[in-house]
Length: 139
Image (tube, rainbow, N blue to C red; front, side, top):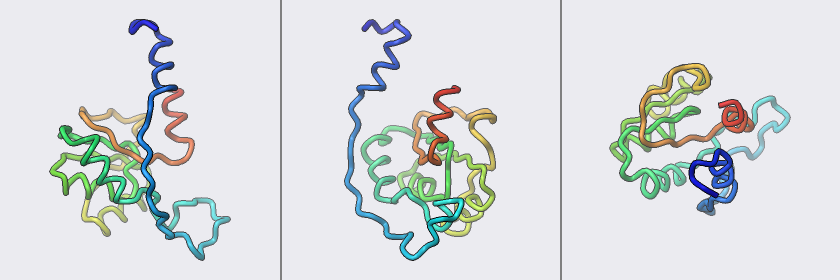
């Protein structure tokens, strides 16, 4: 398929190989009420080991990282460890507080679907289930 064909990018993303990393379960939800409205109420599903892999292997040369679903601050804290400038958006005041309390990082209360996104050269995120797909489909 030629590079200028609008179907080309859809095709590439459907067949693009991805890296698969086996990370041990965090076991942070043992004994919790799994019928609650939020499955992320008491833990963050993004293991810090995955953040290490992202920064070491995929974002090594990147300087400014954007995270449209910043969450609880793990990725922000890791970005700082790797000397990266990080801008994280999140729509949860609880997540913003937790990021500051647990990791000492300040993320921005903003929705990446409606707020101007800053310039960046690297992207890392862990979207809520279904959110990323709907963003891609409407974007």
